Image (tube, rainbow, N blue to C red; front, side, top):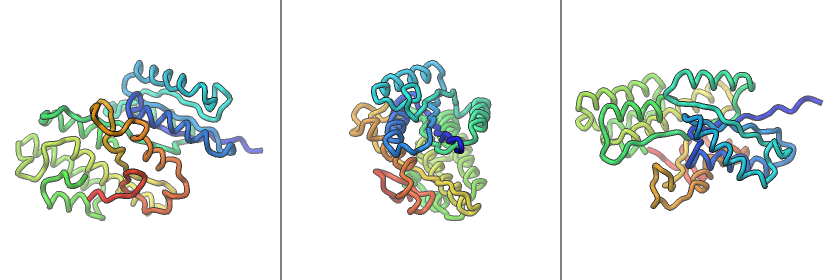
Amino acid sequence: MEPCVTKIALVTGANKGIGYAIVRNLALRYAQRSSDNPPLTIFLTARDPNRGQESLRKIKQELKSKQILKDENGNVDIKFLRMDLIDEQSIKDVKQILANENGLDILINNAAIASGIGEFDINVVRSTLATNFYVGMLKTLSSPELQKEFSREDLDIDELIGLMKKFENDVENNQWIKEGWPSKAYSVSKVGLNAMTKIFARRADSEGKNILVHACCPGWVATDMGGPNAPRNIDQGAETPIYLALDENVVPETKNGEFWRNKQVVPWN
C-alpha cells in the first residue's frame, strides 16, 4: 500500500481577521469531507512570530473539541510560519520549507495593507504595492485609457509591472491625477493583483498545468481594515476563498483566472 501524501495549504496574513477565519474554517470544511481524503497541513503565516504563534494556539484551542486535528487523531494539522511579504529572505525560507514538503496544493494570498483615510504619498504607494501587488475594481481607475490597459487580454507580466512602476513614478512626480490615477494606493494595488491573476491563469493554461488561479472579494468585513460597521463577520468573509480552495467540481467548470464574489463569478472591469 502506497503511503498517503499529505496535502499542503498556506494562508498569508492569517494571524487575525479574514485570514484567521480562513485557516480555522478551511480545517473544519476539509475535515468534514470524505474520510478517504489525504491528511492536510495548513501553514498559518504572519509577519510577527509572537502574534502568529498566539493565533495558532487560539485556533487549536477552538478546534480541540471538534477532534479534527492531528493531535486528536484527526487528519488536519496546523503549523505557523513566519512570512513577511516585503522580506525577501522570509519568502525564501518559506519556499524552502514548502520544497521539503514536496510543494504546495492550496495558496490563499490574504495578506494586504491599506493606509488610513487621507493618507497618500509616495511612501504609502510603495509600501502598499510592495505588500499587496509585488508579491504576486478596475473602475477605481479614473482614466478610461488606464482601465483599457489593465483589462487587455494580452497584457503580460512585464507590461503590468511597468504600469505599476508608472503609478509610483507619477505619484513621486505629482503627476498621478493628470495621468488618470486615483489617490488610493490600495485600489490600484488590487487592480494590479486582479490583472496578475488573469496573467498567471493564462500562463498555467498555455503550459498545460492543472493549476487554478482565481481572485475573490470577501465583501465588506468587520476587521481592523473594514471597520466595526461592516455587515459581514470574518467567517462570512472566508466563505468564498474556502469555496475556491476546496470545491473540486464547480470551480474547474469555469474559466480560469476569474474574479469571484459570494461564490459567483463577477466582472471586475
